[in-house]
Image (cartoon, rainbow, N blue to C red; front, side, top):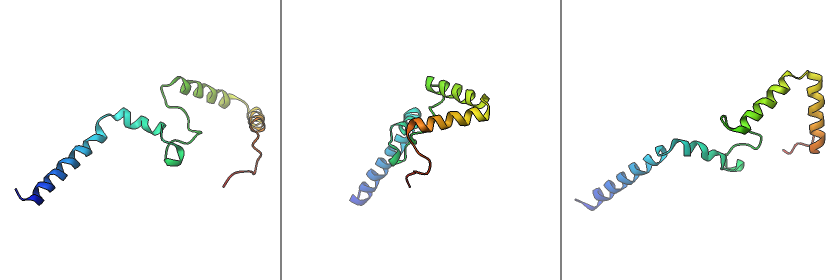
Length: 94
């Protein structure tokens, strides 16, 4: 077998082997996004928790509580939260 065809065959076998790595573990690939930093394309800091976790259940209960709250009370609560975090309106980083 000529040297170039042998090299081509090895390259083809390696590429076929590497292409199978992406389908090895579906759960592993979907969960890796949780560990990638935001600057590298991961989830933002304010993303809701994943469904099926205890944090997700608490998040949904809080969301439902806010939904059922009157609008005036909701606005007061949001203003209180903004004041507690120390973020002033109009000071967004661009």
